[in-house]
Image (cartoon, rainbow, N blue to C red):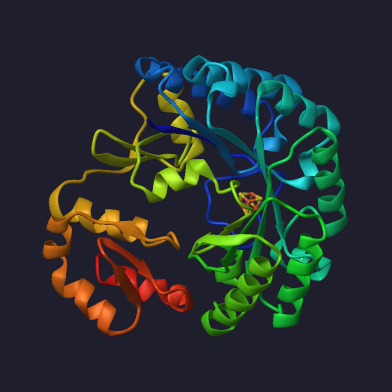
Length: 363
Ligand code: SF4
């Protein structure tokens, strides 16, 4: 059964490293976007009732006002039915735009998981990243979510930041762990063309990031959050169901600018341009695509391996895939990167930080 992803392409300000489809909204733009989203959603009425998870991401969905959230949920509920029926419904938020009224509104709508952006606990690093919220704002937002009754909260962290030491990263993790989040995701900084970081000549620090990754993973595991995917850690039973579906090559529908879908063997993504998205959706035309590709045969099997190997438990494969990728799998096993047990393969836990080497074999 498919997951439903909704992309909200607005943020209060653009972070220096950000490559996502997001920008500050112009006057009235959010309302126009919600109308466009409603039109896009109506094309998928045939899938209504079939979704098992929901993820509202962006951008910064918490930027929407309570009336805008109500409009958003009226569109979503038309596809999902009451959110209480779903296995999980996640809402991404940033501290600067969250308040008690919005938290209550999310709770009332049936949202049962919040993903809150932190990135680092040091305000000097947050300023360098161009983040709007400082660590004190995160503390307040976290507390108001707990007060509103949310018992499943993810926090995002980043490593390999300019000016960030290993001690800083360890401190950020300890700082966050005091709040007892149910889930933590952390990612190494990637510098993308066209971002202010790229223009400033900021460089990625893969070796420093790998050390931070390993040390961070050890601290989180010690605190009872198990690593279940390369970058994701959870308390038992709090693994992200929506994301697990991606890594298991399950189907999903994405709505909004840049949103990706995988349905009926076709992988595709909407245009990342909000203006082009709005124009097409409001005219009732098909949304322009960034790409569209039908996966089958070897390509589909290769993708299944790459996605499945992101999970620390690895992936069970049928015999024909072992035969099809015999050479690649043998090479990676001999190199000490993969382990096989019966029909299951996985990346060795102490080699997860070089998972890109593994994935390159299947591209
Ligand atoms: S809050 Fe997230 S989506 Fe928005 S600009 Fe920053 S990194 Fe990008």
